[in-house]
Image (tube, rainbow, N blue to C red; front, top):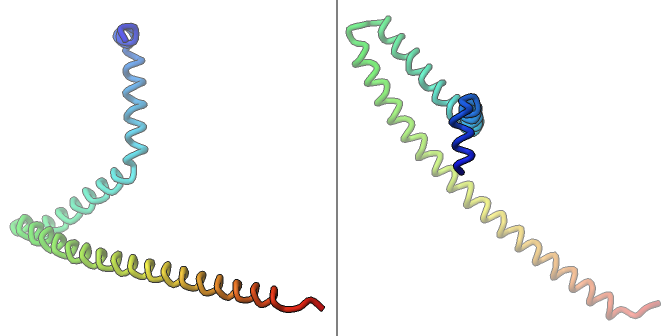
Amino acid sequence: MKDIMAYFSSHPLAIMASAFAALLICYFLFKKIIKLALFLILVALAMGGYYYFKDPAKAPENIGSSLREARAKSGKLLEKSKQAYDKGKDMFEKGKEMSENISKLLNKREEKQDQGSEKAPAP
């Protein structure tokens, strides 16, 4: 451990390379989250700029009301998506149950056919 610390303390380029590699790994892991955050920041800036150029005196009020409205609508959307997920989950479970029932019926039918062919005399 002391050797590793001594190496890094004497080679600052190694420290920079390892830091760069760590940041690169983090970037690839969180790339989609970073893109979403940058997009939301861009939308917020565009919205603020629109309200500021439209009416500079009422811009903070308009931005606040837009944010409250967006929060309320996103809450409703979240509720609807949860309901849709629950309905989809129920449909999946029902489909799985129906599939199992059909498999059982087919297995019973095959067993009856096998029993019928065993009882039939050979020509």
